[in-house]
Length: 396
Image: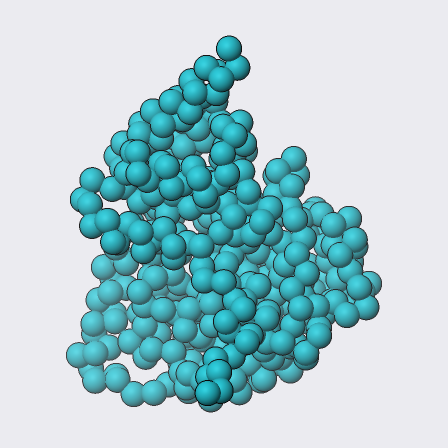
C-alpha cells in the first residue's frame, strides 16, 4: 500500500514546547507549577473584550475582506507610525492574519522558491525552521552566542551568506532568550542586507515588551522598509492569545502574494477578533504599560534569583523570558527539565526546544504571577542545591 504521508511533513520534529505541556496535562497534578508557556497571565483588558462582545451583539458575524477590516488596517498603520516611526498604506501594505504565526508562514511561502536559503538565528521561535522547510526553502542556522547577549552580529550574517541566501529572519525581542537588538546593531545588519540584496522577516511580536530600552524596528532604518516584512500581533502585548490575531506589513509586491495564499487557505481572520483589535490599538496603550511594568518586576526578580542560586543568567531586556544556564550542573537541558518536573513539580522548557545551540540553557517564562514565580524558584533552588551538592561530593 502506498505511503499516504508526505516525507517533508514526517521529517519535521514536533515542538519541544508541546512535549512538556502534554506531560503536565497527563500528570493532572494541581501541585505542578508550569513556567513553560509563553502566554500572558493577564485577562484581555475588559474594554477590548467588551468591543468583541458588542460586535457579536450587533450581528457582525460576516467575512471581512481577505486583508482584514479596513478600519483595523488603518489603526495598524497609525500604531506602527506612532510606535516605530514607520507608516504603511492600509490598502496595499498590511494584511491581518490568524496570529503572527500565519504571517510568518505565508510570508515565507510568498517569497521562497525551492532551494532559496533562509538565515535563521537560533535559539529562536520554534516555527521558523518548519515554516521555511514547508515553503521549500533551506534553513541556514546561525548559532547566537551568550557572550554577545544572544544578539545577531554583522559578522555572523556575513559568514552565513551564500549566493542562495534570500531572507534573513530577525527575531527580536527574542523568544526564548529575551535578547534585544539596539539601533546600532540593526544598522550593521541593514548594511549587509542592502549590499547583498537580502530580504528581512522581522518578527516583532514582543516589540511592545522591552524594559529600559526603546524597541527599534529594522523597517524604520533607511533603505529597509522596501525589503522588510514586519510581523506583529495582539497575543503578547494585549494579552489576546486566544483571539488568534496578527498582521504583516511590507512591500505591496510581497503583500499581494501573501494575500493570495491567505485567501485560499484561510479566507480572513476572525471578525470578532478584528473588532476587538481596533479597540486595543485605539485605547490599549495604558493596558500595555501596566502589564509591562508587572513583567519588568518579575524579570528583575528572576534574574536576581537565578544568579543567587549560582546559575549564570544574562539580563534580558525584552519579551517575558529568562534563559539561565545550567551548564555548571553537568546535565543536559532535557535531563534537568525532566528531573525537575518529577522531583519538584515545576515545568520548564529545555533550551534545545529552540535549536541545538540552546543546550545547557532553560527557558523560563515570567508570564505568571510573582507569587507563582516565588514558589517555583524556591523549588528550583532546592533542586539546584541538591545537584550542586552531588557534584561537590563526587569531587571529594
